[in-house]
Length: 243
Image (cartoon, rainbow, N blue to C red; front, top):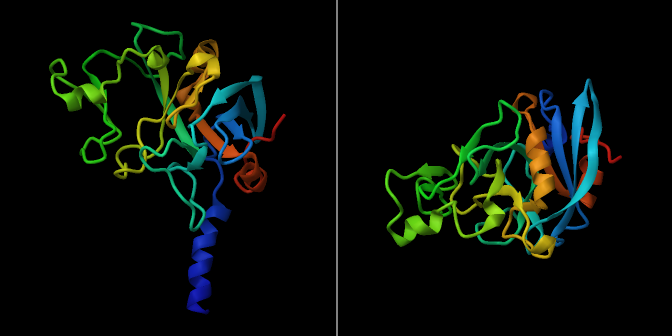
């Protein structure tokens, strides 16, 4: 076989062969009009047997200020595409595991087996690409004192982050420096009038509802794509059909 053809075939096969994990039976599907759009429509789907069915109604979300870009998750990356970088103001597109809720309150309404961590002033989420703890949660044994520690604090004077769910983009233990960090679902700002730096945000009641639905036993996923990519990938990736 021609070696150049074989190399091309090896690049194409992973994308063609990929599909949503069989044990994932819960999926938040997010669709944007295009790569440069900062708004999306979200809907929760659950699978019974081989069929995905919508749960509840669709709702609106805000994305990164500059739109979307391919992220690092469960999906294969198409050859030659631009990928998520720290500070690019784009939300990562693709297929990602989700789970782990975080918030300022002592307790929240959630599925019993969904991990929840009450955030204090000592909780950091490291966004510094030069740190060995990049894109990881760190708990200090002291109150933050340095400028670096204060910059990484999860608890800021910002109610938008008072409740959130982690989206496993570029996640530990395989986090690549500068490939994007701290990607969450969280509460939107300005009633949805303001885009994000890369997270996916929504009104607080919808986030509270979503957290109450997410069940780790169902291996939940977040699929975020522009509509053009969704149309191409829906069948081979076995994505939910839009209802």
